[in-house]
Image (cartoon, rainbow, N blue to C red; front, top):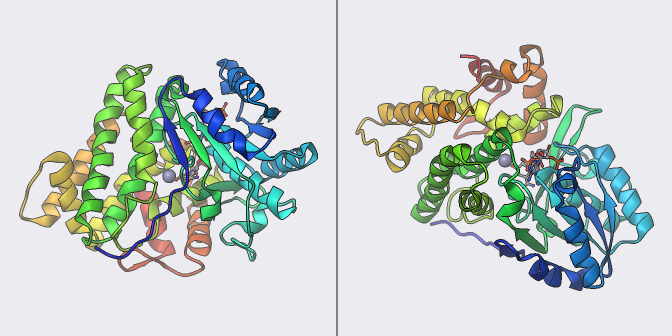
Length: 398
Ligand code: NZQ
Ligand code: ZN
């Protein structure tokens, strides 16, 4: 086991009918809040007004900003921050998917820094990470996917420069998060699949590259992966099932709260780097869908290069019960089994199927290296170059 430190200050309130507890835990943050939502789903479903009423009842007035798009855009975040500044709010209530929560974190930075452009602080920019605080954010997530409600990350997009990059800082962890599975019941099959693919990625990225030092991190990550593998197929047959929704929701937070990598070697989020770059060029590409598309091609690339073969072999046994003393064969068995799972759950497609076209592969690969590799080959148990990335993109087509 390697050394680590974890501090997760977010109070998590999990379950149905706990809105009042959430409001009571949040109201210490001030008397006026910005409530931030996406394209209007929570309003249409009738979820918004009860939340506003509950805050008003506890003496917190709310002002609404709606229209945060999936893959939240810099211009929207800047505009919402200006609105929040004029309204002199004390804290932000993010009510929506990961995009809304990430946008709230961006707004929170701008309000603290008294500046007006969030793009200056993202990874890859000269002032990356150079902010000293953020207004408090509380979150009501409505997707089981990103875990933004507990993470120190925010991932934002800028379609003017084909960019998608992160802001990461412990200051960005929400103060309180309400995980009520009721709010996720309305997710359609496709968005549910996207979320499941994202949850899986948050544990497998480091599982493959982080080494063997922590048997507990391995077992913990396997628990999350097995929960996703078992829950998604059942949920797709019964989308409104509140118990299954709750299982996936909790798995999403456990997947990226920090425990999943504790005791292992830190390693880059390779699938994420490639997917974020692709979504930067194609803002309509959903994060989880992009990851699902890259999985088989990336795993096969690892196998071909002889990297993380032992780890994939371990997953063959731990996730699918396949034992083989030949690690190459076991790793291949894992990949094939996982591909079948993707196919059975409508998560198997190529980049061109999603409108991500070969003529953009080189530019996306350049962005991946430039921003996520800080201009150098990313280390994936060895060099990971622009050419490797392009090869993986083409391999999604096989
Ligand atoms: O905009 P609305 O109307 O709310 O509709 C959304 C949106 O169209 C809809 N939706 C959300 N909750 C719903 C619902 N529809 C019906 N019922 C509900 N309960 O779903 C669509 C997608 O929403 P979005 O927030 O974009 O999805 P997700 O939660 O997957 O968030 C994706 C974003 O988070 C980033 C991704 O890169 C992407 O930008 N990530 C953030 C991370 C973090 N902060 O730690 C880590 C992740 O790895 C990820 O990168
Ligand atoms: Zn992710």
